[in-house]
Image (cartoon, rainbow, N blue to C red):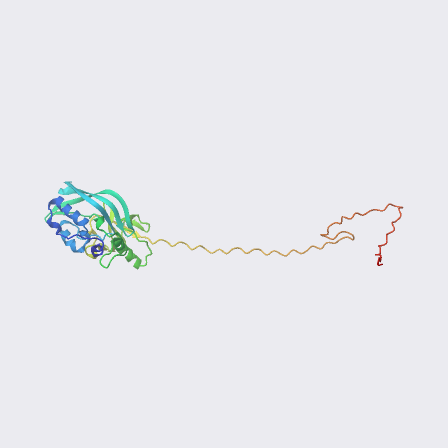
Length: 311
């Protein structure tokens, strides 16, 4: 966002946010109006929002919710003198580095408003950006989430680039997926280099890298890359450690067995009796006629000679 989303959101003429309404319900209306018009995503208009919110650093979100409208409810009492105000959004989709995900629904976001010395302020953790879908260039916004811009780097993209530059071959994960990622696991005793994850109602909304025992480096919308204390961002804090996936094992080469050499068979020598047929010879169909004893032997007939019949 910041200047990166100025190109993605068509802004109306901006007016001072704090000049419209006062009181708890009024400042929630101001915040929702500025958010829906894209003024919250504009670094130039951030000073106008600062007087009505309590968090000093706006997360560098890696997604934005697209809406067609919203309705601000009435305040009701909460703990410690605070007030809760429900806002119902008509959601049409969500844009992230993975593109546009459509899914019309009604989403309810509860704003906690505290009364302080400076007046009513919206307490953190902050809700995700909710912008009118008709004012968004989806393709340009997707590219800004995927690649960043010279002045805007989503927090999840910042973490991914940092660990990749350190030689870790891990896949990109959105902030909301860090606690359930396949390349990360939760840890109770953090170490330098672990990922610090901030949760809002049980869902991660911001993340950074632990650079010292109580120091976090992360990407913000309104201040760029910041070095802060762990508690600079509100919400429940969890720690995860990235685990580089093991490379797939290379299949072991097993040579095929060579065929056994068989000796060439030697023809067996067969002793043949006199008068017996040769091996492989076909038996003769000629019958032998035995001569009776005492019978006269036949006189063989002479072979006829061709007669000369020349006249």
